[in-house]
Image 1 (tube, rainbow, N blue to C red):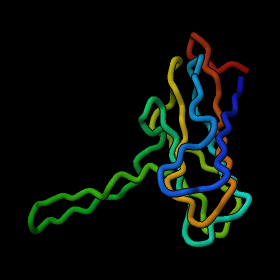
Image 2: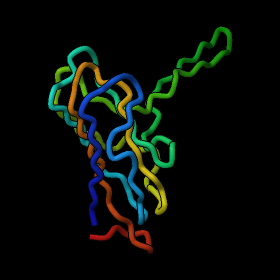
Image 3: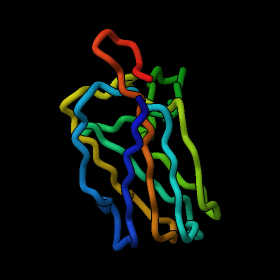
Image 4: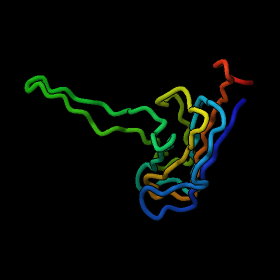
Length: 140
């Protein structure tokens, strides 16, 4: 069985804005399938950024690259990049396969934050989930 969770933010008044509703309770184990981001007014200054959290921890993979400096033997890592974006000038974007884990556990609370609006307004973020049955198979 598929589920779609939806968050809205009508306007941005700064960074780290919670979207509405503030959180969803997950009553069954689920697998994230895709995220869809929409804006009535597309970001025009820079890309808009969002993040979805499972009990306060991002559900997205870290996509930061790292650099190795062989001369000094020092390996440095970039800051974690787990935010998802809506490209400047675009009104919609679909993202898949960037999830950290394959399962969101029953009993979790999912929330979404608008990190920066990029000049856009009236955002909608949709998270598509597939409910997993007790035996680990997906329900249809």
